[in-house]
Length: 570
Image (tube, rainbow, N blue to C red; front, top):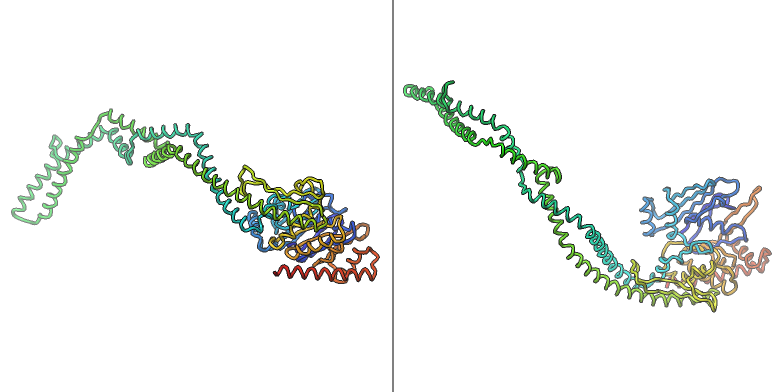
């Protein structure tokens, strides 16, 4: 709901602050006072383009601020969340336009683009006039109108949406598979070559460490032989340089045995030397075996080095270790297995898509049939309302046509066809209806669906009274009041029949201030309303009879509104 609108330096509006109420807000005033300018200012808040020519003479910029109460609008909350705009059931929109052509838009203090502001507009205000984008002309709004009050249609739509989502997902997977298959030839060659390269190497985990150790041994085999031979000789071979370690220990052991025959004072030393002899003897055997095992074959070294080169090359290409190379081999084989199953997968996907399509076709037909039935009933109701709104020859028809293309909403198109006069062909409302006719069509629709239209969007009627009077004006007034019982309505009118239905009556007047003209807006008191209704009904010469007539019209309007309240409670 629109709570307030403040305007600075917008054409005749120097500085105007307007507080709006719930229900029906009527705006009246003399022709040229600036009523439509106020609606244009509201349009600026809703994303309509504003020329710098709209800036008041002598000023550098114009500014418009609106405050909306938007409690419980989940769609609006989600839209604001996308822009990270803080929102707690109240929305403050500020728009500024300067003569240089630049400007700014703030939504709850956050800068936004004009495009985003236009996205917000359908959640805030629906302006019905000659120059505005009528929400009724949008297909999504038309579908919402048709589907909103039909539980069975909603059930069918939910069932269709579930099948459609499954069909789209399977179709997407098939398209991805098809693209992969188109490019699979080169990929397949690469994978097979990688598998062959790694598999032929017959790698073993830890093999590289073992080979590196062997390479070190073979590369230094001469020094190993030399040092191992010297160690072996010193341990067990007597030579020109003297006796070996084991020979010396054997002689020491003999001497200590001789001492032990007479004194056991060296028994501990004797034990340690005997143990040392045994250990050194085992060490001499190990050194000798090591010496015998040393392979100084250069050909062996070349073979191992070549093997190591293969391992290093694979490690460099596939991850830095034999473990990583073997993991790559497993991955390649897994991908090859998947590729081998592509044909099988494609066959299964085709079966799934066919099954989904069959269900999609069935649910889409049911959905279209239900829409056609609902459209027939709603068309008759709207046409009857239009005839009561001063369009006795009007024909209105909602046409739901089956289509071959499946969308998220079904497989049909929706058109609202209208003809105002006998002999004129029915055509889409956006191509044939005038601004006043569109306003009355919207009012007819809202009169029918008002009770179930619980959205917070405010409605604005700018020229709904064009070319009507008498009984038709009374019917229009009653229907506007009926709609306003369920949602906020702003209506500019010149007709007293409509004005007397107001819950809040705002009077717009212009006056000369210095050397310029300014427009002012004020809420009328009860007595002021009587005088304004009298002026609208009889002209500027307001007589006692005109005032009495105005009081009678207001009393009758109040009785009508009480009837609407009772109907709503039922």
